[in-house]
Image 1 (spheres, rainbow, N blue to C red):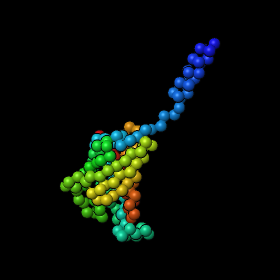
Image 2 (tube, rainbow, N blue to C red):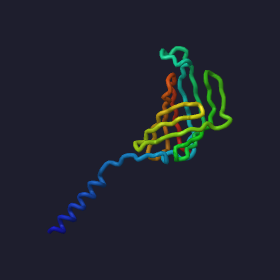
Image 3 (cartoon, rainbow, N blue to C red):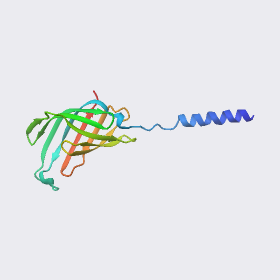
Length: 142
């Protein structure tokens, strides 16, 4: 009888563990490899808080994440109708938290973003957090 009860409780405990919801577990290693992206938004010269004198911007390019918190990025950007491309990749750092949110800093141009991704790391979304900017990006792994 004692053995039967022990087996029953063991099976019940294993069943309970197997039916718990699985939460995404992310880390810097979630983002590795090349991610083509599109970026767009509005900038306010002089950090206008009223929205006056804003101009659009957009970019396309490739993020390359190393899985250890560092990245490079090459891109073509258009600000207020003027296009330019990187001749040398920008560099920066990123952090992905266990809940799959994080931050990214392009240290070359001193731009800061909040991130969200999934546990597979197949796509990452970002929004710029610097004053005077309303910019977002969507990057998908090759």
